[in-house]
Image (cartoon, rainbow, N blue to C red; front, side):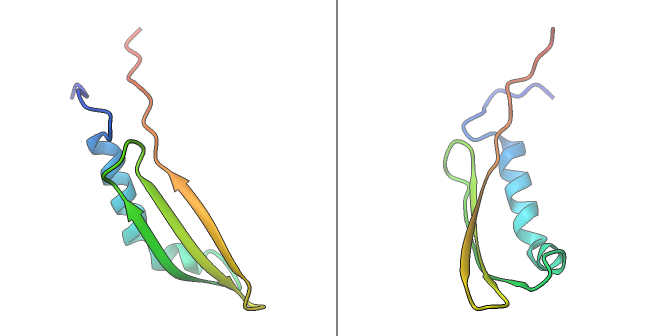
Length: 75
């Protein structure tokens, strides 16, 4: 399928949505950390997920994931 729209692309949005749905499985892979909140913005170029975590000491952390699809290279 020829991608015609990249800002954001359909694939970027799908991947961001998939990551959001896997939140519980991702949390299982982060020992001693709990995902407190996940904010998703798929209405912007390069959809973004902000993952707010709390570690076993009660400290809060934020991880930012940007989903970026490179322009197809047909060369």
